[in-house]
Structures are given as structure tokens and as C-alpha cells.
Image 1 (cartoon, rainbow, N blue to C red):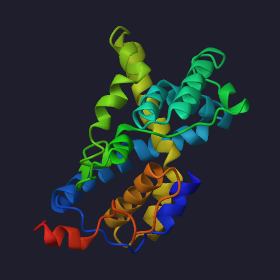
Image 2 (cartoon, rainbow, N blue to C red):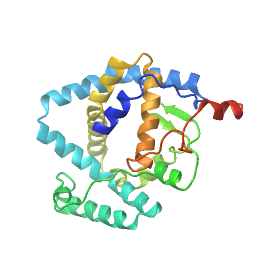
Image 3 (spheres, one colour):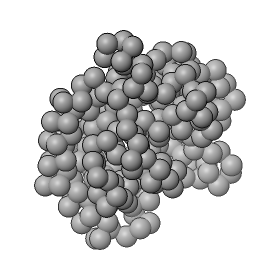
Length: 240
């Protein structure tokens, strides 16, 4: 969250023209913003007010662990065998000793949490990120990162549970997962609303910089040396 807040603060006035769907994206972003203000944002604030911090941590641990096999898969796809083995050990320990992921004993023994996904894997394989796109309900994304929807779903423990569990179990879990995710973004969303002259551009640039931060494991190259930067000239030369 600290890294994300730093990136947000650093891109309040940056412009990014690698956005061929900007008109449609702005409409979708507007829809998402209205929906968020009417539903998720107030619900997340209420959740934070009535739910004790330790319980919120347990909830976050559970959902993080349920999707952690996506991290493990992409560790190995990126050739990070040692990290992949450690992350698999983290998943096993938290799933067993951590009571299904409710607790995080793995961190206490030095198994650090990582953040890998198929979009980062494709970047490591040399696939260009393509255009920026905003999806209804899901928000910012890019062409390259879109296939992660598939791998993230197929490696989500709760997805497989939902195939056999009753809706009375899966629906509340899905709602709680969305609330937990939105609660974690409250500080970043507030910063965007307070600082941004154009919240759409602000969010787009923050998302792009955050993705680059993840792809380069926290050490992205400068804009001048990065082959993955979004520049206006790229689209002018391509007629985009």
C-alpha cells in the first residue's frame, strides 16, 4: 500500500496517450465511479468502522491465500524457481497451520509474500502491454494483462469451491471479498479524489506505474531506458 500511495502521489500531472479507447474508457470509468460511490465505497467504510482490525486482517489473509497459487504458477512461468518453491511452501503452511489461510504463520518464519500474475509473466516474455482498457466492475487493465483473468480464476481456491458449494456459502464470500478489496483501497482512492484535476488520467497513470513497479520487482528502469513505457510518439507513429 505504501508503494501504491507513493506512485499515486507522483503522477498527479503526468499524461499518458497510450489509450486508444479513451472515450469508451472514460464512460466505463464514470459508470464504475458512480457504482462505487453508491455501493462499495460506503459499504467498505462501514465495514472498516464496525469490524475490528484483527478481524479485518484475518479476512484479508484468507482471501490473499485463496488466490496465492496464481503467484506460485507465475513464479515458475517467469523462471523464478526458488521463489516459486518458497511461495508454494508459504501457501501450504498458511493453508494448514494457518487454518485455511486465516492466519499467516509463513511470514513469521521468513517466507515473504510476493505479487506475481500472468500479465507480469507476459511482460517477462517480451509481450508489449498494448492499450489501456477499463473494464466494467473490474476497473483499470491493459490488453496484455487481460489474460490474467483466466489464470487468476483457475488458480483461485474459492472458484473450485464454488462449483460444488451452495450459493448460500459462495455469494456471501464473493461479496465479502469485494468489500475487503475495496476497503484496502480507501486511502488510495481518497488521495486520488483530493489531488487529481482529472481522476481518470490520475488513475490511469498510477495503474501503469504500479504495473511497471511489479514487473521489475520494485526496481523499474527510467522512462528513457524502459522499452515498456507508454509514450505519445509511439501512437502517433502507429497512427493510433
